[in-house]
Length: 387
Ligand code: PMP
Image (cartoon, rainbow, N blue to C red; front, side, top):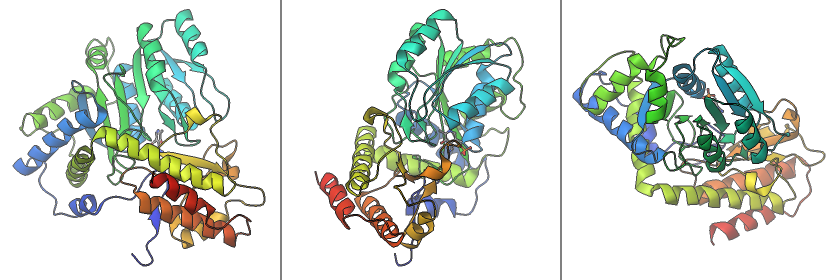
């Protein structure tokens, strides 16, 4: 479309026409039979997207931070020990949320743009009994991906509940909640789930619900308390009306459409497409001489890429790239904020979106005076997209 700028930040992302059209429909009553049916369908489709066939889904109005607190508030009691597998900005945020809810937080530390070593995590799990181990699947500030499967295995052996912040992962990065033994995987609508911002989403395992049901102290929040939300989720899935707080009707209907589109593609195909797009994008950046933040190749995420600016280039290139057709994000990690930019490639991103973005980056960098082999990025990306 002439003049259209692609929104290629790590959320919100480009949404499909069908999803956007759904948000614009006249709002139904939250107890309208049509809405009850669609809410129920969305809940049951979430289980397929999260690969958590026996989990309990929650859909609550709010952003990803609310999803974090919705999880933490219900499974944490004052004095609980929590281990945070720290990969930066969003793990720091999770630690804050746990502290607000009275947890005693230990941190498995990592170097900048790296993940904590699994051996260190294992030895911390041996030395102390943790009720919860918290993992950020993809840290959106650096595009570092954590090996959730391996850490969840270690945490499970130690008897801990496993919480995964999948805000920049669920629906794009491979996550198999039940097979990997993850107790809560949370996200928000605006990223790989493909719905405008406004929905906090999570699935809780039986063990997580048990931890909630056997609490000795009340949940330290009124709005977040599962004792009010759980009956609502159960009722909608059973086709009955229920009320605690008015649901974000239009967004829930859009979620229903988006989850349908995700499942029509299939989860394995979706994980593969995200991997291929990310690989194509990285090949393009490498071909024009740029490099990435994550310390090792196996830490590179599929949902976004964080790229170092080359010498002589800074964030002033971003408006030029936007003029050329792609809106990108600047740095986020406070220690290195001005030194890199971030590109989201999740959701329904296809080959033309990747190529348009690479083209806009090449033209923006060329205008900023960076010297490189023009077109090399496009050729490198195309090669992978065609393979
Ligand atoms: N966790 C991660 C990994 C994120 O990427 C984000 C948002 N970028 C959040 C949590 C917080 O989500 P929100 O901005 O929707 O509150």
